[in-house]
Amino acid sequence: MSDAQLDPGVGEVLVSEEKLHERVVELGREIASDYEGRDLLLIGVLKGAVFFMADLMRELPLPCEVDFMAISSYGSATDSSGVVRILKDLDINIEERHVLIVEDIIDSGLTLSYLMRNFRSRAPASLEVCALLVKESAQKVRKSVRYVGFEIPDRFVIGYGLDFAERFRNLPYVAVLDDSLLPEGM
Ligand code: IMP
Ligand code: MG
Image (cartoon, rainbow, N blue to C red; front, side, top):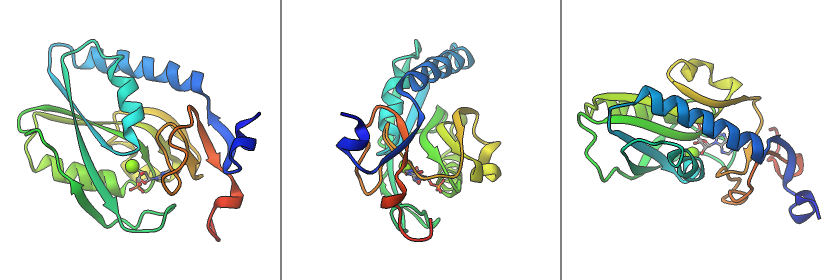
């Protein structure tokens, strides 16, 4: 049975499980070599980044720690309004730490801009961003994302941590959300 039959919301597969794995291994190598000799603190943005971060971290032969931040942006399920609120703050003090923000996807870039501003004010030793997916619409913030998994078109995607109304995070690949589930006008 195909996944489309299992779940009618799953559209075209944009990034296969195999490609995800290959790219995570490459990113791990790049990050490991850039951070050689430094202790790294990975900060994941809940909930979507958890899946990517867990895989990425296992490709890093470095001393590293993890922490998580939960934020909510007011808006509908497929549109972020840009108003960001902290639901769960960090447990670890990031002052003088080498921080790498791990994000699932950058769309408008508003969430990321907010996070960078917020973290910078806490005086980390360094602050970089690793995003699994960056949409074409994210041009404004693209330059502040040091590590990019894949650049994708401006379509609503699900899987490998990404949800639509909390569903589909468990798909092992990244697919487009089927048109039939998209709200009017998207
Ligand atoms: P931004 O603030 O517009 O860059 O949106 C970032 C957040 O919106 C991501 O961390 C996701 O949680 C969510 N998001 C944006 N685009 C998608 C998508 O295509 N699928 C699922 N979630 C998305
Ligand atoms: Mg997110």
